[in-house]
Image (tube, rainbow, N blue to C red; front, side):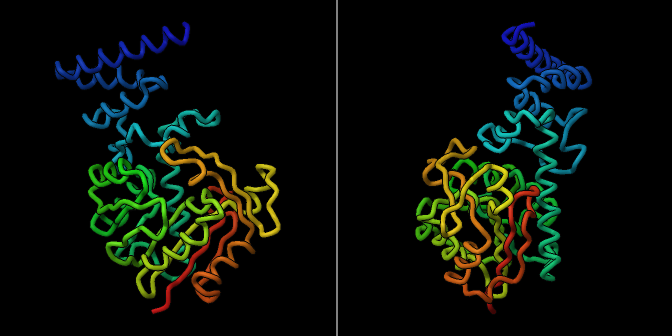
Length: 296
């Protein structure tokens, strides 16, 4: 069967699944839509129908998470198009769970368990790949999200019931609604150009409550070596390219930094004493993690 014929057959399966739902045949619809979910062109639409109607095979039923996925989710698109991902849905949800476990380990290391953290801001949160796991762990009332993409914030607010606000392209233009006991910034500093790297680190200081933590990640030496990237004399490299289709690549590309570069920027913006923990090659086995504490 040609690719065009396979896609056409998958769309027919979608229509058949919808008709079966109208007739009240949930078991039949689940079987048909599961087949449509195996084809990339109809994967997300079939997944949405299975989740919305809580059919057999629903990830929500299996995990207790809200497993809705936005069609605009670039991270999900990354999994769908990555040659190593044979099951993009499973890999996408498992990746959020992995992030949760890696964050839990960092917070245990500084004696501030996640479950005892009153208010958490997930900054540069995207379309909720990780947010859904935070909400299951803490409850929506303890989670706030922020992203520069308006649709991403709105999706998380509607899907997960969290508070959310828009970020900005210019760091100094962000307005914090309040301060948070934990600000978690996963894989933002691994995408920033030199012109905004330290500025974002400085601005995020204002989002953290006294005694609270900032946790962020970077592409360190392992990632640079893996991609055959040569850092400059300061320990920095930036390329205007990333998996995001929604943000200008010169604003959000791919950045690599040495440990010394990061530590110097921390000292300049927060003070050297703020760095209370670091774990190299921590997130996804290739991003370094840093934990900063704001004085009381």
